[in-house]
Length: 208
Image: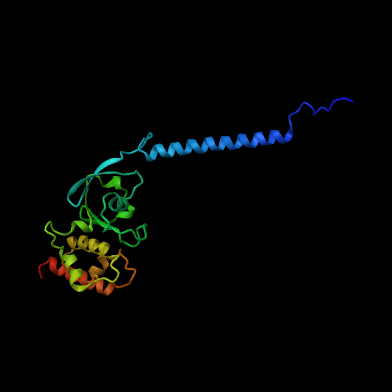
């Protein structure tokens, strides 16, 4: 009896197992390489085109060294790197205004500003408004006097927006003030009390 022409071929089932093992091994190698690449980036081993990680920010009048990722937002850096939790993260997409800070005295949404972009600029958060002796800023005092809040989550953003607006218009009408802080939202919808409080803050800034 002549041998089958398939007799010299390897066992089909064994070949399939070996093939599958090879595919799995190749996939693991690729995954490991990808992981090592990501780890190198996160740990600060910069690749071509990277940006400086350790930078200095001027926040509330102080130079603060901080280690940041190139895609890191200012809101994230302030809250989780510098411990300035008065800057709230609400929508995290530039809609609610809870993260409002002043950059060179102009209100900005910190959730939509990359930290690297504010080097060399002056950043002011809600923690930086009070005087060194603890005396509250006039707008903060207005909020306290008029109890212009409900849950108060949005108030730091409203205060910062109002302070920035009042630098350009220190004696606004109620309607002008409403327009000036219209980029901020209150989840409790307590806008009337907020405007009353901010108007009182404007009066205190003018010494009225």
